[in-house]
Figure 1: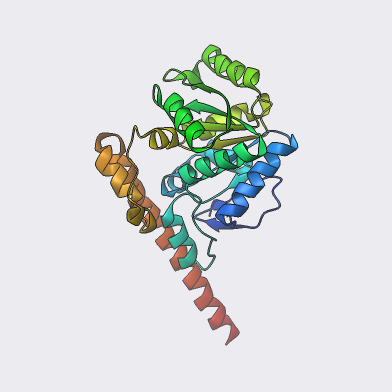
Figure 2: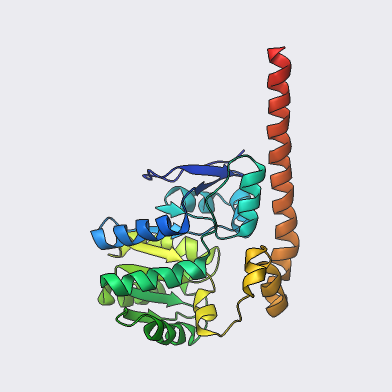
Length: 271
């Protein structure tokens, strides 16, 4: 079984299909991030895995290294909570990326931390910033930057993004490029930025801005947010959810069967 452990982290973690996930509740995650952001610590980043991440992790050595270097790895997807419980290593609740984005902005407004929004569709970060300033008076949004498609493969464009962030000097950087692009970008650039914490948050700018509708609360609680997103953006997401979710289920079933077999084998040996 493929497995890595986050480097330099003191938080307890459990492993699902080889993916290390920190067993922290939502409030503890927010506390850990704002504490690091306000401390001027060495730059690092947070990843928020879901079933898609677990599948990518199996075949992508770079993605595994991204996870190994992360400051925090927290469960975005409800299926990860189900899987952890099934495998006998329960987590302490979901840390949804959009909810985390909102909570960190609320705490940043209280603590005077500066934030920067990188990525999203054209105009989404600007619209999200306007919404966040209205919801959290006093929030210091140092800047937004929407790079052109494919910028991560263009050294000049990546340099422009880093320059914009460097000039703004935020304590928190939110990266909304989608997986695995945002994780690769944070891994390759975190050390080159003087930002204590970067957080990959996927499509959260669009959700906060209302560009993409979010699933009703009952669907979120039931673990069906993926189904709502598939309904809203079928052309973009059907392959990921149809094939990816099927493989995720197979991975968890295999791990569960292996654990059961090991328990049975231990009982037989003890007789």
